[in-house]
Length: 319
Ligand SMILES: NC(=O)c1ccc[n+]([C@@H]2O[C@H](COP(=O)([O-])OP(=O)(O)OC[C@H]3O[C@@H](n4cnc5c(N)ncnc54)[C@H](O)[C@@H]3O)[C@@H](O)[C@H]2O)c1
Image (tube, rainbow, N blue to C red; front, top):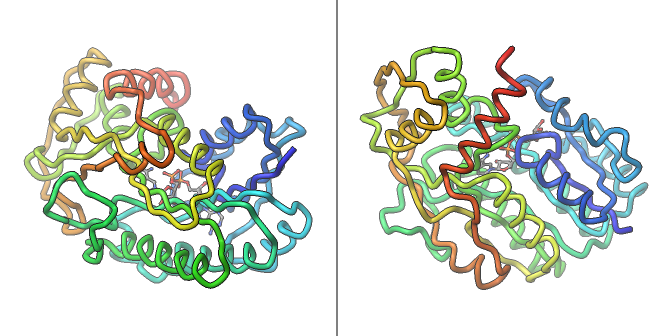
């Protein structure tokens, strides 16, 4: 049984990846510090189904703590690293850039240093569509320079990709950076629009729309994102950067229409100005991921939203 060390495995995307790894016959060691950026009880719920499994071990540790990470490497000798732990809020990063540098860059460096010391077959790292900023050519291709992110969050993700390249170049590590585009679905991170609006509709609260509602996002179902992560882990490619998106951007107003139809509720709306770190459109060219991983998204937005709402009704309605 090969061991996968996953960071951020208690989070939204991570919990889906852990499920797939366990079902695929891997032993999983999850490093997560259960930070309080959002309610850590949600993360406890995410990992609860795994805690009794022999093939799962939870390490409550911080990726900024290199000594703790080193002990985990020493003990577990992982064959693969899936690195998802990060601070991930574009707007929050504008006011707290130092924290984002600490976790998203220095934490990543700790992992890269350790993978250099302990041989691993492959490293998959979460990057983000935020690296593209407002790149005006659509769909976005990985060969864009991606040097004008709007948020310090995007800057830390781009920096992590660049550091990863240097570790590939100097030490021959296999590293694939996946640029995720607006994941949504079960275990959704609260604070993201699909979650916030699902909650508002089901609890009869007002919906806040930023800008005029025309802003578009390439919403990608979390199960598809997790599938791409597993495929990437199983296929060392040297160094690659791959977009993982849906290639079908929907506007905020279109998303709201899908949510209204799926919940059977109509919204009361309030418009507010857009944040300066919010991009206008995200849209992934996914041909490279198709070619190199044989991956493409399977779940259309109507179905993914239906699953998000069903999960929300079961797990969050009482909160
Ligand atoms: N959700 C998206 O749409 C999206 C889009 C682009 C990129 N990403 C990236 O994907 C990854 C996963 O995102 P998510 O949406 O699941 O977020 P999440 O916040 O739900 O998950 C991140 C997890 O990492 C943990 N973590 C944070 N800092 C840590 C630290 N210092 N040490 C140990 N653990 C720590 C958190 O406790 C959390 O459980 C992140 O790297 C994020 O930047 C997500």
